[in-house]
Length: 183
View 1 (cartoon, helix red, strand yellow):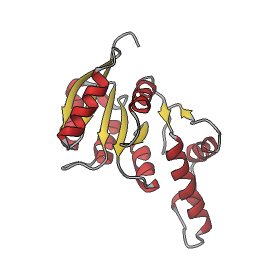
View 2 (cartoon, one colour):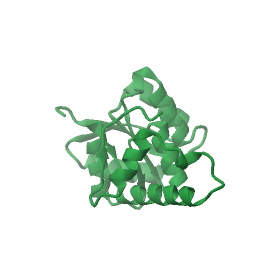
View 3 (spheres, rainbow, N blue to C red):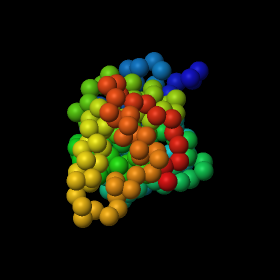
């Protein structure tokens, strides 16, 4: 990118927003252009500011991160914004919900700043980043669903893109995928 990566930070905890802002603003190629305290504010602010990337907390008031992401990716003016869901949740169901809503990455808040910055840069170029933790959670959920004969939907009926994602999770290096229509 010739211009700095323009990011927004959406989290309902001021201290988290401040810490993320400090990490990002220390980088010459990243510019924080806005901060939001809830999902509705994040959506409205993104419509006005058109960031390249939004760091979106999963659990926020008014609209959660998945709902706000879905609104952003379903709106023509903001569909190209890369959303990185950030959370403390280690559950595969949340990962899958976030990715299906259009998020390009899912990071747990215990990730180090280098991982965060690499993910921001990758998402800004249009990549989908699947971390080893995400890959393991998705694969574990798939295996669980496959072993449960009572399950008649969900991961047992994978779409082509889901199948590609699962194949990539079994590789030794974290996969990066090109954005596609997930439905």
